[in-house]
Length: 162
Image 1 (cartoon, one colour):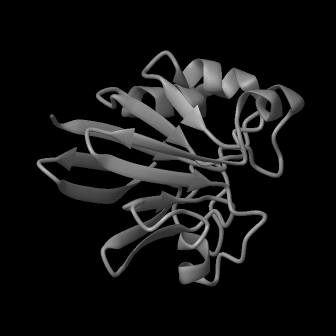
Image 2 (cartoon, helix red, strand yellow; image 1 turned 90 degrees about the vertical axis):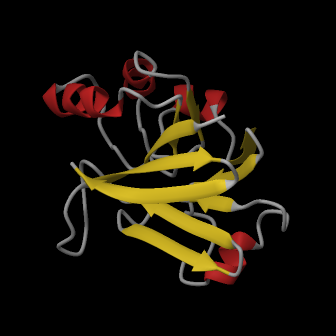
């Protein structure tokens, strides 16, 4: 079964606004949306849920409503693809092996946020992915989000310019 998933992080919006509506429009077609933290407000998650179910983790800037809803890290499986996700504010993101080490070796894809910088790095047979930030990109990078496709045991990841 083919699974399409959107990956966002560090949206930092506090309420519904035109940029959030624009993002929602771009995420149609995703079976699930993975939010790697700092959605900040429950209103952002509720808006994204108009497109698809949202699985998320808590970031360092999340309001109490999200801290009650989402864990610090999680593992999910979709048609055989095992995904681990954390925001990254409690780990050394400059150490890729260390980030991967927060999850068991059978996790094929580890997603994080926090840096606001896009990352797609293969380490052995595992992937480390940061979608970047649609609202507050850093380091002169463009605003980005991620898109993944899992089909027939093959994973494709890409960054999309917002």
